[in-house]
Length: 443
Image 1 (cartoon, one colour):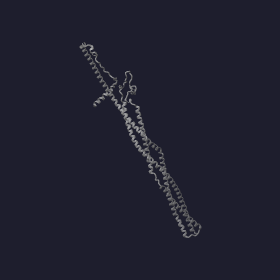
Image 2: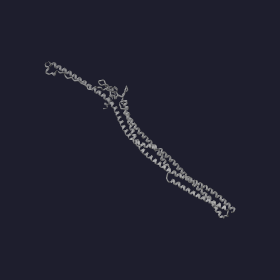
Image 3: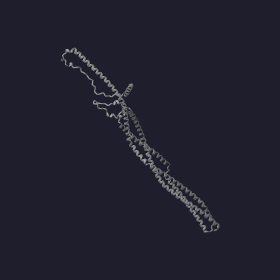
Image 4: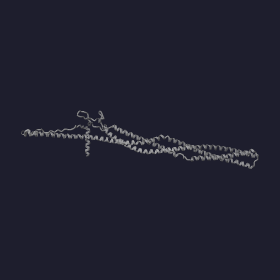
């Protein structure tokens, strides 16, 4: 082998060795990327399975929350309407009762009509049930009420109303709370990544693409190694080569740069694919972490969900409180009407007392006039009998008519019962007379 051929072969072997070394590096990087991509792909499959499970659980829990929320909103609407109506009725009747009680507290009882009554033996006949005051404290109409019964009605109605309002308020809080949670969860579902088989097929397809490129790169590496061995063998043999053989070796060595360029392109594709799958793994990892966070948040709502269900049972039992409160409102209203009539009747009592005094005075005048007429009639009769006796008595024997000498019958006017009606004070009389004049003016 001449010197020029040996020099050419050494140059070709150097280029082949550099190309082979570079190709080995490129293939090594491709294998590393392939291993990394395989790791990403395996992780995607694991995360995908867990993400699907957690997502299904989240959707199931959100569906449950939505169902309970619909029931809660419907029940809240019914309960709020009934509660507001009942509260309005209780407020109105309480205001009416307060007005009636204020009138009774401000109406003093005329002390003259409560003077103690005595029987003929001097025994106190005052009804002990009507004297709730003591000392010099003025008696008012309110003192004659059964305050304990009234307080019982007011307290019971208030307690039942508070139970209704408390349950309604708590239900409203939970409905608003779960409404906000539902909005948040719906936002998560809207923005969540799509879970279908394309996620797994994407990774598998990319893996197949990488494997194809890596296989081709390995074949190219084997080709470069063979070419290097061929050049080394020729150089070691130190035999005379034909120009055509040198040309073939030189041409094959020139292809090394083309193969290296193809290997670099393949490596770039493998790296891009690996990066793409890595990004997809990061996406699914992040999605899984977010799903776990949402799932835990949904799980943390269990106490509130239990409260909501228990509250549904509580609101179902509120029917008794509603019925009882309506009945109590009716009783309070009837009592308020009675108190109003009591106040009005007290005024009528004063008018009636005055009227009875007037009637008694009129009867007394009639009796006095009648007694006077009886007395005058008796005297006249005695005078007429005396005149008859003076004129005719001495001529008539006594036994002629024994009853003729009987005196005239005398009559007495006797009362049955005792007039003990007290006269109201002057201030009360003035009010009564003014009221009577008003009534007469309206006729």
